[in-house]
Amino acid sequence: MRLRHTLFRTRQISACFLAISLASTISAQATVPAAITGDAPAPPERASWLWPTSSHSVLNAFVAPQTTYSSGHRGIDISSEVEEAVVAPDSGTVTFSGSVAGRSVLVIDHGGVRSTLEPIASTLAQGDAVVRGQVVGEVESDGFHCPTACVHLGARIGEEYVSPMLYLGVEYSILLPLPR
Image 1 (tube, rainbow, N blue to C red):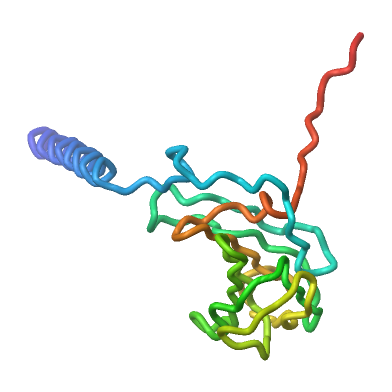
Image 2 (tube, rainbow, N blue to C red):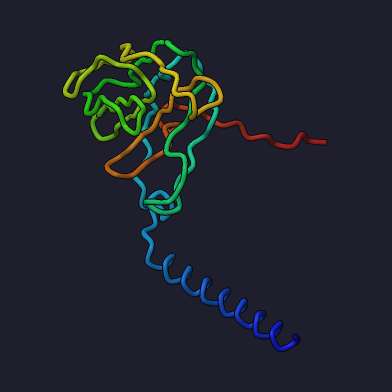
């Protein structure tokens, strides 16, 4: 009985070492996105985007993925109402308008950075020009992404996802202790 227990423990330990070794090998070969290595595109000199809905309440923040294909939240979710008007955050050209994985998506190229808006119903088509603040669609209910209606706003420079907050001009407060 004792011998069987010892063999079981030895196999467990061997399996753990194998898993750690394998994980180290895989992570050493993984591609780390530029946002983490510091090679990410520089943020804009001046935040210029408009909020796409009347709300400025962020339900889910941007979370950069650890690697190109790992999980993360590649944008922000902004509280909204179903059928609320969605406006273009800046002037640009529609590069995609259609369905991705069952959700309506609109992509606008603003000259170096692309915004993605979803789920929104839009009559715009690829190649259409939009101006800053133009109504580009209305919020659809997707029923699973947010507990209430929301608009997902993403930002990409090339193939790199960046936080849309950089373009919305959001400044964070820093709390300092009061002098005694």
